Image 1 (cartoon, one colour):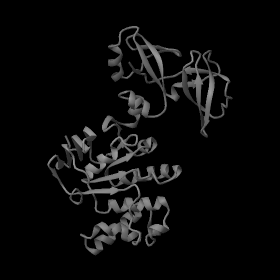
Image 2: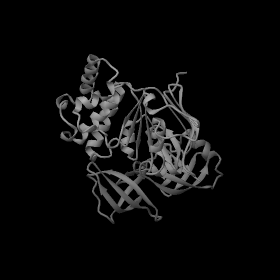
Image 3: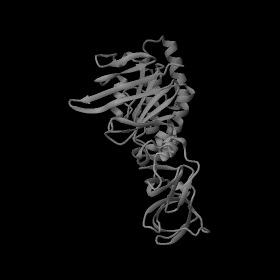
Image 4: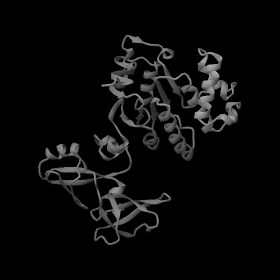
Length: 354
């Protein structure tokens, strides 16, 4: 088995009496991009600062390349951890041009090596044309790429990114997320990102840790977080969805107002359903893509709200029993508020909680 590049084992961090991170563990393999995702104040930036060596931990240990860099009584200084960091505000040197900013951390190399490395990175991040410009002459996206190139210049073992796209508009954020992922994958860089933006996490990361109150609720792929949430917090936090009341008919079958759900219930959920007695009441998670618009269906719902999103419309629907549900429908099906529409259930993933 290969040694993970980053390992956090039962780390705790507190400010005075207040615990901010509670017995948190995670593993990031070499070449993987991880993400800590969660609401403000959940401790995700604190973890990044602990990995970087800016904050001490109260207990547990942090290992990089199997070398211990932090425990309760010992901490390797930040500049000795072989970590690169991209800050929220980029922290570029305003008096240095792009080339000099990228060159900043390479003083230990010979002059020719420095020039070669800077040229390589200017090419990698697509900034050759602005190499002699100063930060104030660059767009937000260009500044972000300079910060990335500067962090990558010394060839760190691990790259940390703290809300790196939060100062950019939405369309630029989406494009840069894809660009940065391509750069990190092409350079075989191991990285960990902190964000509160789910789309950013989904676009960039291989593994995502959903955090709440200093704890990781689930460390998993975007697909599994969405379709196989480990608990109700993750189910509520990731994507959109509603809970509908259901009744267990028998092992692997649940009845809800829209029909009976069975089959394609993932193994994790099978074990949960098997311990529910017949007749048990459960809450079933339905995503907007689980409810399909179908004019031919006898099952009908009333349009309560609608959000036009270009290619599709997100409808909030009132079911016959009074419950609300969400449905994503192609935008050429444009229905008025108050109108009844035909729907059918098409749920491939059954997620139920007590």
